[in-house]
Length: 84
Image 1 (cartoon, rainbow, N blue to C red):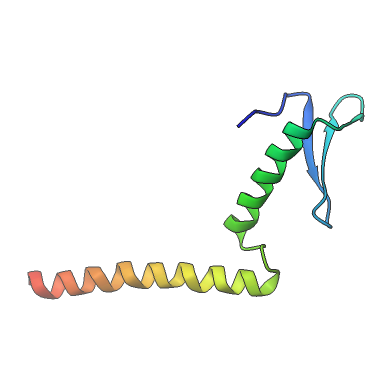
Image 2 (image 1 turned 90 degrees about the horizontal axis):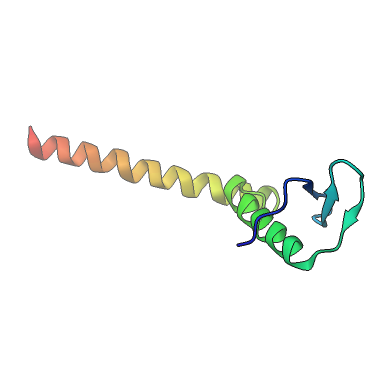
């Protein structure tokens, strides 16, 4: 993945449209490779914070995370009962 030069700042609007803007001059860049990289990073960020389907996506992400925690805790409890 190409890195965005330090003079460029990635900006994603509320509608999800990504822009690359020069931090010092305000010029909008149309470099397609850097925009593709920005879109990939934005997709990963949306998955990480659960913003991929609005409130429903956040709910799914929350319960999926809760299930992972439950599996870990229940595994420790089962192991503890067998051990002692």
